[in-house]
Image (cartoon, rainbow, N blue to C red; front, side, top):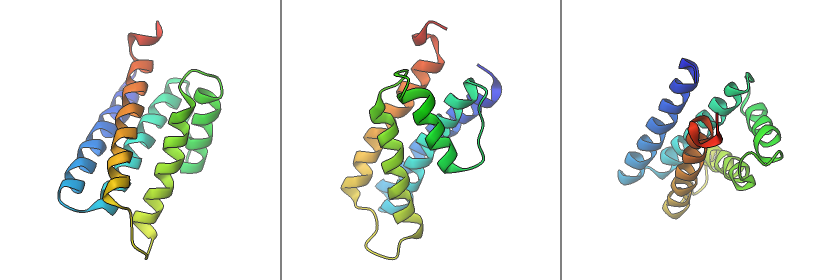
Length: 129
């Protein structure tokens, strides 16, 4: 695993921890954003392992689906988590309405843990690499 992949995985875990702290301090919109970014960084790490890199969020998410979930390398639910988390991040970052609920962020944090664990397992020895 190269340094760029390790850096992305570290950023993913740091974003997850930031989301937990932001939620604890009653900032669910910002916690939703950090939870999304945790999954996004992990998706970038996975794609970089295949020597793929993209400049937009939409391209990363689409490529993750194509390369990992449609092929069966990772559970297809992970792609759904990433898509739904992006929607929640957009509400939290750009919305002018009620924002992201605490319950939804708690659910996103469960997704984040599952996503990061799957990415770390895939990129580690769990795949026979």
